[in-house]
Image 1: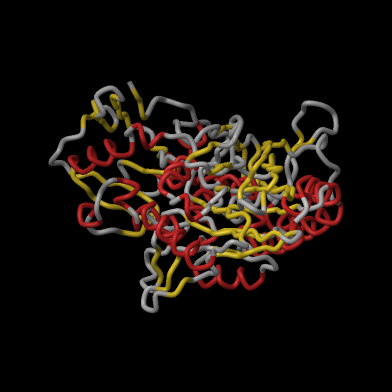
Image 2: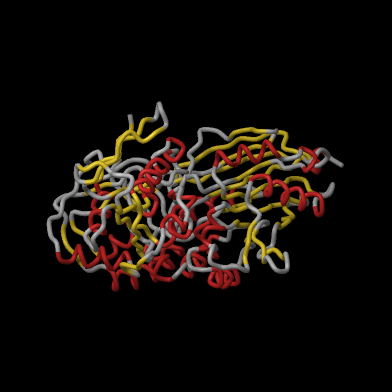
Length: 490
């Protein structure tokens, strides 16, 4: 075997958590300077495919949800656009399940690329729902890709009793080992885990893997993590590429056929902008066909806010988050409204608000439930949601709450110091009315730290959160909202 045959160079491009981020945005840095969007991303991928010999493009979950175009077509538009990008392999994220299990299986049939997942199972028959792995032969080298998805997939499927998942880190390790033991051999030159469990969980997973299984890389998603360089745990490279299409990860590696290992590597997180590549006009035309239809339907003005309201970070109170919580609070006699900060997908809204703007900023429609709970249970909920580990960037389940709430939490003492509504301290034995969406209700222990039994009987107050917001904004003009210190940390 010659040196050329023994050592091969590969370029692995990777994205994750694209969330229907199809359109480029002007940055204002210079005239004509734009960043992100599928057209520039496709232009760069095309460029690399022309320049380099062995190029692989992978996506680590959450292609879907987050844009009006994706929501309107329930992911069909996204899969069609992805078919144009032609990724070599994709793994599932939690948002691939947002439109339901049967729809996911339909989308998978539409895809011209392999979608891998090793730990979603049909319970009764102990059969995997998707192909657990794929082996790509690239220039004579075999590369194995294995997919692992986050625990949130199980939460999305909670009502479907036929589908289950082995999702704890220990179970995920077992699934990886099972596949490597059964299918990996000396001809497999590189083994890549494609995960959607978050960067910190990726590092824990890597530490638990048996080196004999020969996993070389983890390319992940879910936590929207921006890296300066990959982590290395247990001799496994771990990378992620932020969120959206404003950047793309790039590995340039050299693999040794004799040792089935990476002997040299370089990684970059590249800004996808007009300096990196020229836009791809063909994918622009494809996206335009979807955009024109959506614009006709949604580009009508709902109303005007007093000013532009923002939601810059999930892990803190925002004026836009306060507005949404306050609107829901006026729907019924409600003491506390919990709005998942992560369900607000845009960073700003207004002053002019179109229906398209609203659906882009708040794309996830859902039912709202109200419950009556004791003050003791309410204190338990706030103690749980305000704990420090629930405010980790990219992995938190922070909540926006309505006007009148004042909760003070001590990070030093790890306890709730005080909780009041409209200046009145919460009394343990009093009854209070709270409101949450269906998804958080189904998974109340994970998100609120409280069981269904403790929540008691539920009542639906609306089957569409989006309808509530649309109607309110249509009939109330020049609304303003401010950060008031509703949740305070000391």
